Amino acid sequence: MATVSVCKYYPGGFSFDNCKRNALLEADISKLGFSSPAARKTGTTICGVVYKDGVVLGADTRATEGMIVADKNCSKIHYISPNIYCCGAGTAADTEMTTQIISSNLELHSLSTGRLPRVATANRMLKQMLFRYQGYIGAALVLGGVDCNGPHLYSIYPHGSTDKLPYVTMGSGSLAAMAVFEDRYRPNMEEEEAKRLVRDAIAAGIFNDLGSGSNIDLCVITKGKVDYLRPHDVANKKGVREDKVYGHPVTGSYRYKHGTTGVLTKTVTPLNLEVVEESVQTMDTS
Amino acid sequence: MDYAAVDYFFIYFSVFITSQAFCLNILWNTRGLRSQLKDSVPVTGLCPQAGPYGVQDSLRRGFSSVKNELLPSHPLELSEKNFQLNQDKMNFNTLRNIQGLHAPLKLQMEYRAARQIQRLPFLPSSNLALDTLRGTDDTIGFEDILNDPVLSEVMGDPHIMTEYKLGVL
Image 1 (cartoon, each protein chain N blue to C red):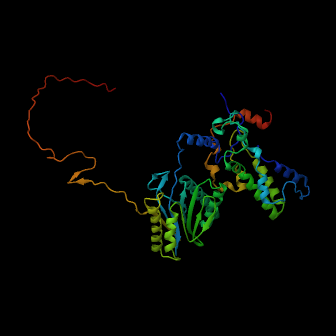
Image 2 (cartoon, rainbow over the protein chains, first blue to last red; image 1 turned 90 degrees about the vertical axis):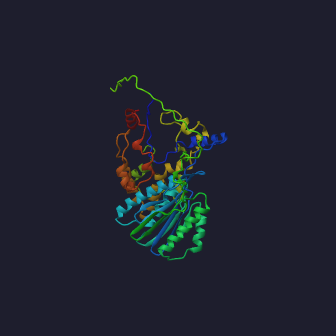
């Protein structure tokens, strides 16, 4: 039997073993007319806005897999630290794993420094990681939080560039949401106005972009308090089937009302039966 | 185990011991940081066609051909393989520019000592001292989550690996 004689030490992390095989398969499969499975994307509308006391982040809740809706109510606002949250667009697995890794690193870092983590730290960690992988990790993020220096909002692109802005949108519905922001944003809004603005921006993305849909989630971050409103607004409610007609349950019922078919004649014949023989057979239940 | 370590650390060590003048520039290019990075990617360091069992691994690496062996299977493969090495080089170069040659020399001596603390050759070592020196003992990255060597499915034959390490193979 063959055993591995001298095993080189593989340090862990990404393994590129299957890349050549995948490239060959891709080429052959398209010749046969099939297509390889598509990664689940979040094809999304996410946005954030800085208002007077903090930051409001908003996201829709649809996850797509090619042309099919894979998840009607997925959560796109990820926890990074008690005062920092991050919305993720792009490949769902990438945003999920990236935000979890950064959240763990930030927690270790804050334990080491003994302070509440800053949004700039999270931003720097994310951009360095995404640049290291040269855009192959498809995670477009909107990072927002409140720290000792006030509220901050960053947008981070998959290749590692970041922007620090008072209002940002990302995802396939970003143009629709940005149109709403550009029209109605003003500095130092009140909380209710900011929530309404974000809700309207996400709704614009939901109704005008195929990749976004379902509900609107909001996350309001202020100094010392986080309101995670999921769902804040059910924009696309699924219809309810008509349940009862004339008092009878209609769904799945094949019963007809009495009198649907007219009765012409009725004959009743009683069958008299008498017991002739009775025998008992025991079952072997051992 | 660090069989593929670039051995100019050893040269540093001997330089330090024999206390030569520190104006040796043969090992550090003075052309600048960018050339540093380009030189450090070894083209010949690509994995050969042989898989872990010594024969070519057609399923994973495809048919063996010259083009197959020269080119990496993914644009990130080389950069990821050398990532830690390149980071260290950049950091040492910056440290040398700020504090003088003694600083990276001292640190590299400590790295060399920490790297020698290993378990038996066929067992995975924790490299805790090395992690502490590098500062990666309180960070989590993809190398800790994906393909953790502790959970590796193949293991070398203990006798052969010890003989290889001792050089009596």
